[in-house]
Amino acid sequence: MDDELWMTGALSLAREAGAAGEVPVGAVVVLDGAVIGRGWNQPIGRHDPTAHAEIMALRDAATRLGNYRLPGATLYVTLEPCAMCAGAMMHARIKRVVFGARDPKTGVAGSVLDLFGETRLNHHAEVTGGVLAEECGQLLSRFFAARRSRTELA
Image 1 (cartoon, rainbow, N blue to C red):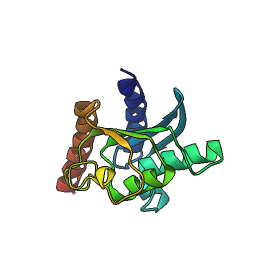
Image 2 (tube, rainbow, N blue to C red):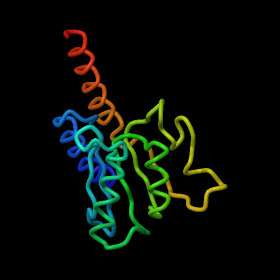
Image 3 (cartoon, rainbow, N blue to C red):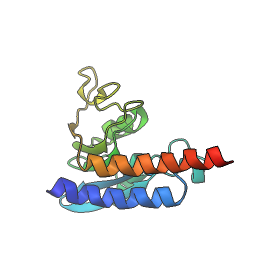
């Protein structure tokens, strides 16, 4: 139940991203029952290819704690992480990653690759996928359908 509660917070941030014209992905970092980091997709507005929701949430959490390592923390994100974000989570020593919708094109928590299960890497996070997957997926589907519709009308 807690996973759904925290994912609801990530969904709220994803909606903020969508309202700003960004791909609607949101993330929160939780430690000891409290949100310590929040982020949503911002690569378009920030002109920054690294400004994914997970990276923004990790930056926020690290700044709040005054440490780039976040052992014991869980990162909740509405979309399965990409390779860049998974790498950042590993460097931060995130304990657990919980995601909503699978990403069959760039997801590396089992969809395209499983970086979290790669034995040659030195840090491994526990991964739980599919939390509020339908709601997370519908948010993305509606966003891209609206974008295609605007493109077709132009």
